[in-house]
Length: 385
Image (cartoon, rainbow, N blue to C red):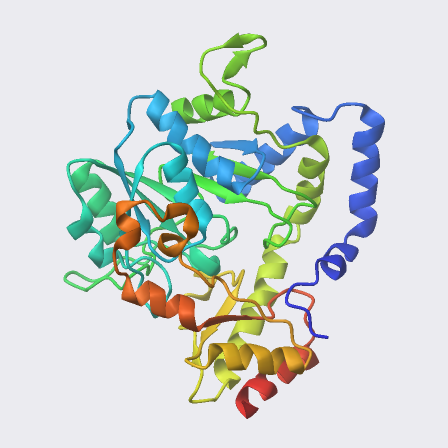
């Protein structure tokens, strides 16, 4: 069996270090809001190039806390609009609707799966307060055009960076009059440091995965950071004094210790993912299969997931499983078609590009412990389909 993502084998590489730091936390007798969490927050801030990292319970909470903080700070209020890609995991939507804000859906670019930045402006209204971009599947989604829109309309840019930790958008200023490609990336820095704030996930299957749920908010905004930290601690800055009606959303010391270990190896593992993606892209030759368009700058994609499309997706999925290749669908049902949102006005709207993507996508095995033989076998099977 070729596994989609072999977490046991991935973590076995660092088992001695992981066991050592777990034992150190156990022996310390301190399990929340301690030195390990503070150390990891400092390490992630330095890695991403941001002033503030605030750890929390998971990636969804990271996004929820950002929006909740903006509401507490008077930047947003109930009923305000947040522009969001129609093609994303439901957590992006849940963070918005949980805060009684309204998602405004924009179609993706089918070549990149990320939001089509040129289509955003036509969806901006007087009630729009933010653009929530998603670096989907690990591909950085950024452009100078996006920054200009945010400045023109005084909008916050919030990054859903759950899948793209380690991706970069190098500074590459275009010539005067050059058109910007969607999600091309023209500003220096890492995803998670580009917008006003970002939500990050360390779900075990992520490129930087904990051994349980955990997440973080990253930002350069000191007031926002302070508010997010209070909100994630019941709304309290001082023990038993509650400034806000908050949440209980905190990373524990053991997960922070694990993440400090695994952060050291993130760049090397992302580079392995890029090599696998290159091999897939160069060698899959089947007219029934559309391979993802790779960015010109390879550092802007960390290939959390490698997605292909096929009109015969379900047949292809069954074929690969019959040949002991584990493949998944990210995602079978778009958010606006989920039962959870059946009563929302926007759930009745048509998003044909998004719906086509969700009918055709298939995710191939992608992880840093795949062997060259396994990757070749996947490609050979695809070419024989």
